[in-house]
Image (tube, rainbow, N blue to C red):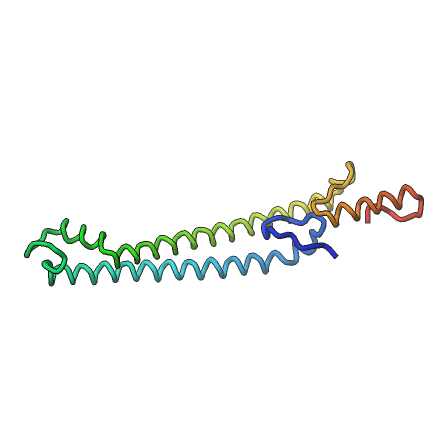
Amino acid sequence: MTKPIDNPFQINSDRLDKELIEMPSRIREAGIREADARHEHAQAKARLEVKHAQLLLQIRKNPDKFDLRAKPNEAEVEATVVTHPEYERALAEFNLARKLMDLAEADTSAFESMRQSVGRLVDLVQISYFSERPPEASTPEGRRRISEGRSRSVEGDGIDSSQ
């Protein structure tokens, strides 16, 4: 049995059939993670906007509570909002959600690219691209199988090493 590859974005060229079969599920799972990340990003953005509005109201109602003069100008109010610890926390959550959304989007894109690559590798196998040169394996199990095939064909036991 072939040991699974630790990197989900690495193609196991010894098992193209399995890669091709599993690819739609991988892409769907990545798409779900991306949708969840987009939703969380939108929620974090909404929380940031609400926090901004709440602080604006609080500062305008009680400027002295925020060490401002009785009638602060817009720049003073805005500066007080964006430097307030609650706003800074909401902004940090928003930025983290954005980062996670970007990473999820990158995963989805990588799986789509991987799907195309697997399809191209299958095309190459179909046209016997690899028959002109010795086969290469990307996993220790694949290399062992190729080595065993070569040993059998050298011994003359009649087993075709291309299987």
